[in-house]
Image (cartoon, rainbow, N blue to C red):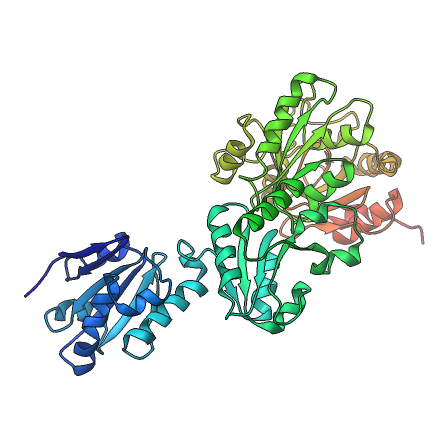
Length: 511
């Protein structure tokens, strides 16, 4: 008899349903995690069927001797009656059991078909699978590479190392993890060989926090490569959930907030291994701004392991800080103001502003793409040429202009300037002189341009030394860079070698 999605039992949070061709796909989507038992007329299926139903409904005697997941659903498929469904699933052998979770992920049961083996598998699967954290919020680390992957991926991790036979520490740790759903990543270790990496002895039960929030402090480059620098050991009762919670909360609140100075600004905006940062720009001398500082402090916990929270006191007497504010293009008359930074590489970072005043909402809107990064850009200039007749490029015009000219067969030479670059100022007359000497000959063939790199951020352009010169030659895939000392003579010689119109720049000598 075909039973279509008939609810057989509903005890606690678990459900057992009979699955047919019409409701199978829907059940896998709406009832995850879902364990499905495909059974037939064979002896093994018949023998295990009663045990499976008893386990699914929480009535099996073995379930009284241990803790097992209660938020799981169970399904039954009669392979004899559901031949069409069995063809669809391509399951050819009965009995078969599959666990479906996380949309398209599934896991096959490969143990013996008896209640004890199945329950052991069920408990271990939930314990070891991060995807099933609703029941067991801590993931098991068994190998060194798993440990390395965790510390490379997250900035605030709570590790519990304990022998597997000690239930109390693990139970207290899991209860703490359930009460701290945000911020920390929770991991537990049974493998004694991994204990040493947490500074613990074999057979010792210990709780250790790993935190790269410490990396904002001034520690040597050598130490930053040693993860042990970031380990902080719990010295309380490892079996007491309340003490564990207090330890985790106090540490998180202590280290989850940064007073940003020039050095820390550099790290937050350049270190790609750090989290994005949400920073309040404020004036410490204004008492009305203190309430905004408190709001930032309150945001520490909801943004743990998501963003670094900090405040930057923007004072007019601090030249270094004003340089940083200039770098993120913020009007200091509009304070307090939230900004966010996300490093791209060692030289560049995304910048965000003009969002809500609440730091959590600000971060969420950035993460969802509602707030886009902004860039320094002088836009479309009214005066396209400077006093010497050199074309002025901006972020808005840089690549479109170069492509337009290259498509016409015209080469484009660009020099880059910076506000406080004295060598750039020294090179300027030489650059202008090369242009003036060849102005008539290069018309329609080569264009000389200049770009103020401090006021215009150009994508995929890495300038690490000034003055800097590039040649975008028509028909060439990549630009050429002048690596010699920036002088009139070297620039002329370089153009004669690299430009499509090099003959124009060749120095004529008398024989």
